[in-house]
Length: 322
Image (cartoon, rainbow, N blue to C red):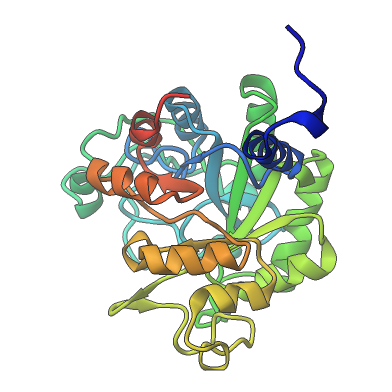
């Protein structure tokens, strides 16, 4: 049986059809819930390693969330910390590092990759935090090139990458400056032809402003946290010169003024009212880092656009059947 011409369809049915067509016409930003594996799948495998990204893929992640820094010789490497983390790093002889540890920016790529990051230090606070993480001895801090190559071999072409630039306006001597970071990052992205599948995110919004100017086709996500012990919004040092007070005290309005299409708040800072405000401004909202099943279920019910989690499989389980 053939459908009648569109001009004879009931208005409600036609409105629903047009809404669906509008969603499918949008770029990556719209239709599917974004399950982001945090640092790969930190709850399951060593963070920011090839083993971790494989674990995220197996758990159902649609996006690999990862962090990048620059070595002394300009390699873009995948690591969360500005300095080698003694709770997950051993030297070439298998000895655990002791602080103070060197910065990534002080090491060449070869020097950096002499270290093993495939296991959590026994008895450490970090090991207690991730009891389900399975060791993968021999894992090295990978280059971003290696992560993209792994995805090309083993992941579907729909997989996305959410890449966080790890730098701080409060510690400028510990990393490359924002300009060098962005230039090197964009060069790797372009080498693999992945501009359409990458989001660049940061707590240091200077990076995002640079991406907007140098690669306006690359999506960005503004990270925010407003906790008593950690706040990248209040002082203005992290927000690329934008002042919260000048935008009515509203973080969604601040993100909109920056020009980022995605707001990624600490999930404890998100409320239904803030979510509604962000949506009214045309922003996608993808909170971090959500691990408790009850929190995941609540945020899915609120209607967020995605979730960043150390356990991406828990997010998949919380989603309604498709």
